[in-house]
Image (tube, rainbow, N blue to C red; front, side, top):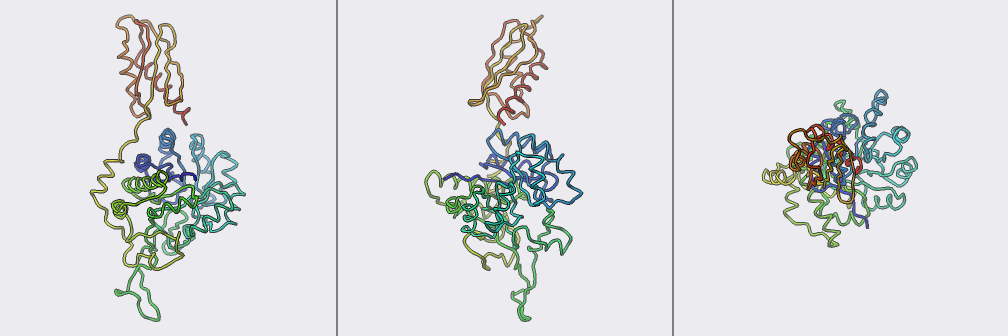
Length: 427
């Protein structure tokens, strides 16, 4: 049995770092265009590239949500938006618009194509159609039972990415036009106004079905599957997806860390035992009303609706503070070994080693010192000034002549070239 990928959301860079620190295997995010969460902060192109470097060096993946319906006038923007990310080894794109499939296959042939839940794949035939057209992973409609998802998996061989936690839509995934009709804000363009979270008067035969004449009949409880995550693992789902690109870094880190704990527990012990403190923590991390397991084990029912309030529970400040202290910090740098060789009249050289990976880079010619020669301590001190680089030295050894000299600029350039070479090699 393969261990499923734990896929976390990121609406901004701090969430990406929080997800990595909390144990996510992959992160999904959007750029400033084409993402179905327009109100999230989202990522600049430069931030996505930085995120790709960071994730790949730590063995994580990045998936880009390109999941709005594309207007004709926007097609010319897709190539310049994606090309730098593709060149930087973006791991996949999540799409809704069928028209994108052939375009992406032609222009970005090595890019994995994932079908968004907004494609509303509800059965084997739809999944097979997408597979025949180049899709390698689908996010099924959230309204499917576990049995229906297993049928798609077994009969198509496609990777399955399924939601395990977070907000739920009342409608079939991706098929709601309510927001568009009421206010001209389309959910399929990332601008849903969430009319399902509003209160309504509900009557039957001219009698109100609510004490105060108002209720929330369209507001689903948030999904939480941590107590049945063993069943989802056994069903063969490939990727467990946490909803929440509009939510805080504390939410991302807290939810990711708990699911990481119980996925690992299952594979270590063959079972899970969910602690009450972890359920309480999840309930205090932006959950609407009570928890629900979604549609995996039930078709429908009024117990899935919040009814009295769609508002998020107030979060526990002490929980948020503890999460922030543990996870909300820059991701640890990659610790490497370095060997520098300085011989007068020859080019400076440096070997960098990370685990079983090694690169060798050369720099400027080493000069003979006219006054004070460099010492080993001088070289080590300068090379250790790694700044915002993704690497830091665990150990540096220096082999050098006694009368060497190199300008600080040359040592910095040697380090920069070597770091870039190692980064490309590891990616």
